[in-house]
Length: 77
Image 1 (tube, rainbow, N blue to C red):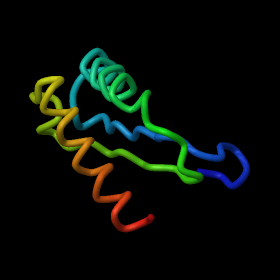
Image 2: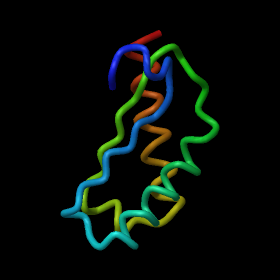
Image 3: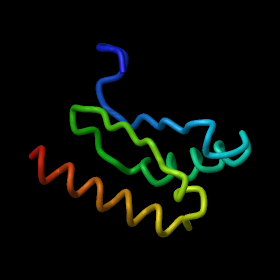
Image 4: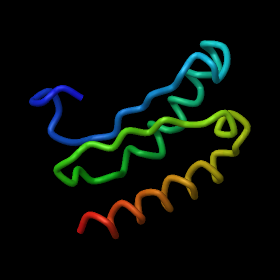
């Protein structure tokens, strides 16, 4: 992210290798929905999903993001 553009938030990087535009956009919508409740902690988080995210259920994606978020909070209090 460029300095000064956003103070905090979640940046999604979904590569073309993950599938068609329809599939990638669906994944982005699901991830945005899951990250909507994240509080701005004064920094940005970059999420770059792997191919397995395309086959994951909404609940699985939510659990994975919650685990990653808790690990980030533990390392950056």
